[in-house]
Image 1 (tube, rainbow, N blue to C red):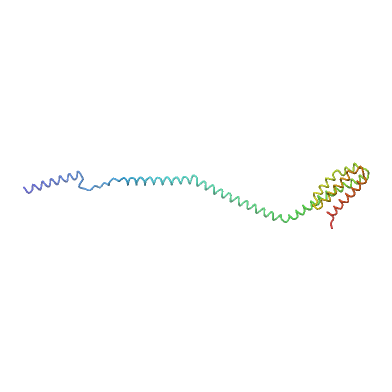
Image 2: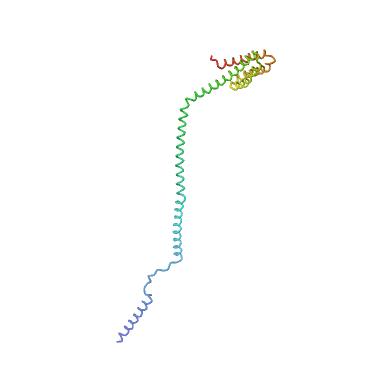
Length: 218
């Protein structure tokens, strides 16, 4: 009996110790994680902020590209295509003009020859007109019609000046002498009809000589 009593007492103590251990849970290691420290919390917040900032940045770049860069690039490409097309049209026009010039080149010499011939014909007309005036005045003066002779010479000075403008520079002095001779005729027509008739003869011969020099074929 005495030997069994300590065993029962020890058993009861062991049971009470087990109950206390189960109630307090201090006999088993805790499975709950330790709360994170300040450094870990800050790192998590920083990582979260960086991710959000990256998303916002990429989103902003995408919006900017589709809202501004892409339309601008598209517009520039359209403008480049338009300018390229216009450049091609201009090059075609230049080519066409060059071909026209090359086609007209054979006619250039002919055109210059025609211009020269026209200038010569105009010169001849001025000379013959002045000669006609002088010959009409000679006839009127021979008939004693001084007023008619003066009327015939009313435009002769202008014709001679026009003739001098068409002549080469080395022959303009000839026309200057004719103008001076005409002035003598007009001034002395009433006072000395004979001297005026003589001056008209000299003037007519000068015009005929100039015509032979310019227009008579050798």
